[in-house]
Image (cartoon, rainbow, N blue to C red; front, side, top):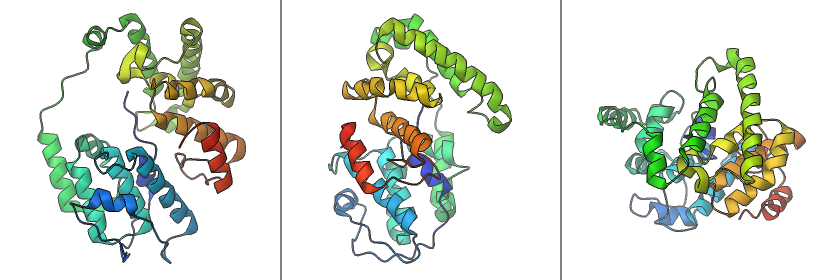
Length: 296
């Protein structure tokens, strides 16, 4: 199952900026990572308070994700930096360097191909974007995923993987289609079936169905079903998912997204910025939630 990073989706809804920001930090391709780790944004007149708060959150989260290591950046981090710089209306040359970092990072093709109809980067850098996209499309296609080979390679229970694969397929059946809005009722019925199956599997295994049981390929399936459930189920499994993250059975981003979904439904604000169009909580609340769930 493929899931995008916590902050990435927000890039898709940003308005095209004027890119006229003159900043004191001088970025080059070679010093980019080091400079970013020391970078402190300043708010320009054209940037709203809401956008500035969002950009600061993206920058903070990205620095934490890289663990302040110039060698710790990956494709998701570079996409998130583009998000922040795009929102802050940084100068065009600096955003161009950030975008080049995206193009040069491992896994860039997956991002470019999946987001080509949504992101504004193709408007800002049409020649670079289209050239990179053409290279990606010309590249040999990847070998299809083989569940049985995967189970054998990592010594996993293929019967359980078969169930997880079916749950994942139903979870995404209408969400992956362009006509999702007209199929919400059908998807909700499938979601309820999936929720019952996840409850049964949890009763059987008494733990989150993460890397130890299903490997990295399926580690997000149980979380996705919970994320698409109701508030009662989300709150029931929140401590289970927190423990899974602590035990390295699941990445951190899904926990943040689940917390955001819960806080959005209960309080109409979010903590980490994963929910589109929802205001961030006050700084004191954000800090308290981070401490409660042991999120640095």
